[in-house]
Image (tube, rainbow, N blue to C red; front, side, top):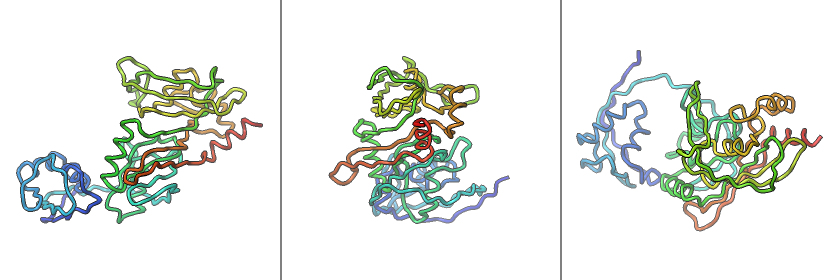
Length: 309
């Protein structure tokens, strides 16, 4: 049985870094163990006040606002231990940080995962007022991952990605040899659930449009190293597109070839060979084009060295 405690009336001054968020979304983060339906009710009944006045669900908090929060019952739950982790930072300024995410670390907690990059990064920076993931990488995938340090930057970056104004490139090692040096895939992708509840993405006319450009970097005897330039950002897009082309990613347990994957284990490849290595996009605040690059992860580099033998 969970314990509960009752808070007293509190007042929260809104820092500029937090400005621009809808008040309900802000409160969801601030009052993590308070049910969302209660938060909605507190806003609707005027118990949540901004600058001593009633507010609405769609109000966006502004710098300098004073938020009044009435007493609420908070469930005391046992929080999972989040180990500190020093991620390799490739770029950082006042509004943005880009890290080199290692493989087999989730972007965020949830769905049976206690914690991920965002939780660990917040643990390392307990005084940070605002930290949010700009996008996600699959747990197995290594490479560039962006985090916003201001809400305004997050909104700008989301818009940049939505409009396709960012160039995101990945290294992928695939089975077989590409017929052409350049392959362009434009197909609709749809998500379904497997019998064990996992996501599986496949080409289906009922799905959403997706677009990837693949360019051959190097050919090996039974494999091809390609650059994957994603023009859209659908779930498992690169993995599903390469399976669709008949060249699944080496080591991919969900979309790949299980027989070949067993052979690749002998080469030390224990995950899907996919690495986000370059991103170019307009800076969310400064008037400049930003490019950040990540070197190929060590385990993937060793696999290529084995193929060269």
